Amino acid sequence: MEGKTIAHSRAVMSQIVLPSQANPAGNVHGGEIMKMMDNTAYVVAARHARTNIVTARVDELQFHTPIYVGALVTCRGELVYVGRTSMEVFVTVEAEYLQQEKPPEIALTAYFTMVALDDNGVPCPVPPLILTTGEEEERYNMGRQRYLRYKSSQRKQENAEK
Ligand SMILES: CC(C)(COP(=O)(O)OP(=O)(O)OC[C@H]1O[C@@H](n2cnc3c(N)ncnc32)[C@H](O)[C@@H]1OP(=O)(O)O)[C@@H](O)C(=O)NCCC(=O)NCCS
Image 1 (cartoon, helix red, strand yellow):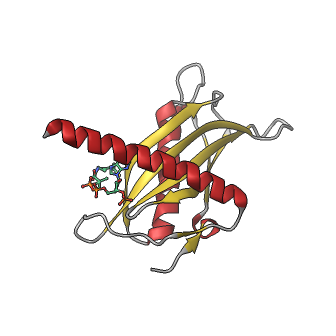
Image 2: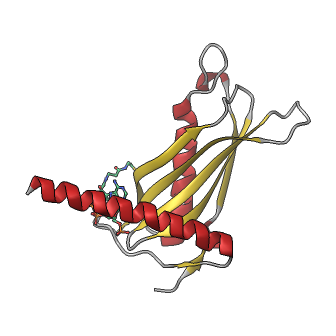
């Protein structure tokens, strides 16, 4: 299968957050933002694999700063690592308050593991990643470590169940 670059599947999705997505004090619910992040990771993975995609795991989800009603929330997603059928997507969330002359702030970050499924709902191979910069390679190696950690924990669990 031919490889694809990280740039090929990069995705950006924005929306203004509304009062119905927040608590009475105006803080946007974490779940609302997590849903946007999941959608962004879905778009990235589907662009890379061109198959049905499901979310298998979310790692290192961090809420760095609160987001308030009225913010323009922008999710940016890009591939970090791909295995055989799984893809790790790093998603960042920026909040921008349009009436303030201030640059957007990074509010959340997380790593989503997405799995490509064939027409029968079975995990299927995805194209390899073509890395084009040293930074992409560094992040890829870190993604590979998280992937191998998961594989090793799975093996331990399977052995314990035998
Ligand atoms: C994700 C899912 C398809 C994996 O199925 P499975 O039978 O465990 O398949 P496999 O063991 O072959 O795993 C497939 C790939 O996913 C990875 N994977 C599966 N579960 C994972 C987890 N919890 N964390 C990280 N990676 C995971 C495996 O490492 C493997 O990657 P690789 O092919 O790149 O090596 C299955 O667990 C599932 O359907 N989960 C529910 C998904 C869902 O409903 N999400 C929410 C709605 S979108």
